[in-house]
Image (cartoon, rainbow, N blue to C red; front, side, top):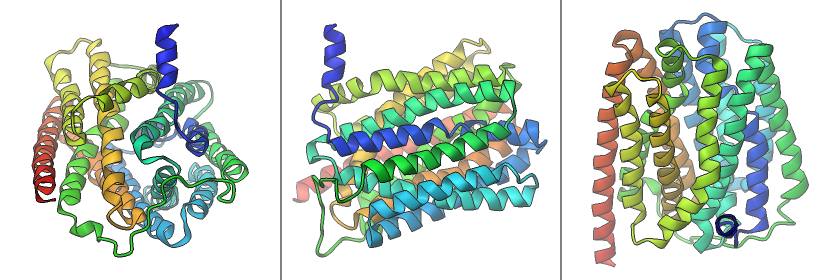
Length: 402
């Protein structure tokens, strides 16, 4: 009972608007069961080669970059509310339409357009979350949103695997689209800007361009490299589970769902405990990158099927640490300039990872096999770690100059 009360206490102090944002995100993410199965859908249902799937996933990444950039610009100009509503609704329509595309070119174009619209939502949502959070609660607000994402993601793949087993891939597109539309209706109903109270409105008279912030640029490069390794769990890793360890779609969905459930149960207490310590955000990001890189190294060491759970656990803890603190770091730096611009670039760093990460992973497993691919991914993780160490030194110098 005491443990439960302590868990509940970690959520205290967050604004009602942040809770509504979390609910909307939960509804939206519960339906995004298409994404982790996209590589499987393209190979098993549409018979595309690994190489073709790599290029289709690259169009996914390009759309994400363009969408994130446009979303940041539109947020700074029109405000986060209008961008969020229009992005969610149109994404729902486009996801339903996506199932009717079956040629290589049409899928490249279709997924590119879907991601432009879908990822314009992300910078707007981050700015909304920052506005509705007290400064001291921002990291926990990020964590609550991530809990909603992962609770939806833990249910989504499991349900998605069940739907594929009993019905077909087509049902996933309908559910994804309809949940986006439903999330739009909830957003309009509960989070109208006239009803919301902004807790931390940031206005900078002479905003500093994000691209002239050296520490932020180093941070973005490190996050891009981290994104490349992290995204393997959503493209090449499901293929590894199926091709090497012969898991079914349902078993893959349950393994991916375990990641989301662990995050839902443990991330908020972990973040609160880490915030009470003396570690800086850069040091915590470093720990997260180390654990995620290790999740690939262990796969090379043995063919024992249980190592899949060990790898997933390492990645999950690494993810639980690096994402909330990297997001909080970006929001902290954003107070120097236009928030939409800063948060768009933070989002774009992962979108760029989508461009190179999925395709590179597919091409590597196609030509070198899975074990050598995991070795290369581990080297990329090491490069990200080195950059985070450099970021830590830059931040120390900044503090000494103040």
